[in-house]
Length: 318
Image (cartoon, rainbow, N blue to C red):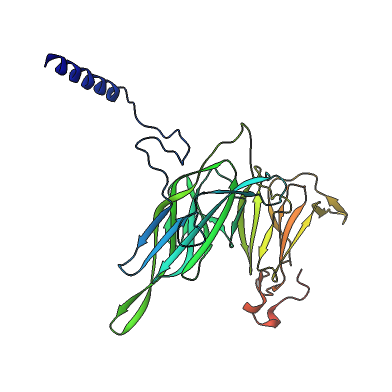
């Protein structure tokens, strides 16, 4: 009996000593093999609006209605200078039940580069009226239909952690004989690109986007804020024309054309022009021109031609 009591006392003493010394579980293992007591990042979550209106979001969906065995998956990176050969693809599926979606979003750690996001992905801190906490930013997409799939590309060494997914849209509410679409949205915890191990002093490009009249312009920025040459895309393609220049030229006081030898990151638009340019990593400019825009005579600003009467457009718009 004394021996049992002594053994019990030793166990209690060890437990108290560990508690006092601040020993606690830490997740040092890979995300797919968690430490004891620490869960893996969830790969599926559900946002309930009512008992009949809800949204299910899956990280790494399969071709059916379930989850793939591997998430994220390794893919070839976009063929852009400054981006490595191997990347990780993070794919998600939103299933909308009795909900009309407008936006879908998943968050990424602010330290992780996003090389590409489709379809029409944008980086933002806001999804509709929903805001993220510090350390995260949304990759958001225009969503539609009852099932919607989107994805983004990161460095291959990004690993999963528990982040945020969500949506913004409308759901039907009956008022008497009327059915009224009511704005709604929600967030839930889901696996995403949360950790990355970089070599010391290594910097990688990050995805950015800007809106100009009638166009959404997307490009990669290097560590100095300059556009990575040949990374610019613009939508819709028929309306927005992308051009790449290896030189940046200005006209001096005598009317001579001069090459700019150095400039910090900048976005420029010339007077009387619907051509928007950003300094690129080749020392030139990456530009997008709105081909369906004109300069408004009254404001001298670039606007969609369809937004003003034809006689209010200046002739000779660049």
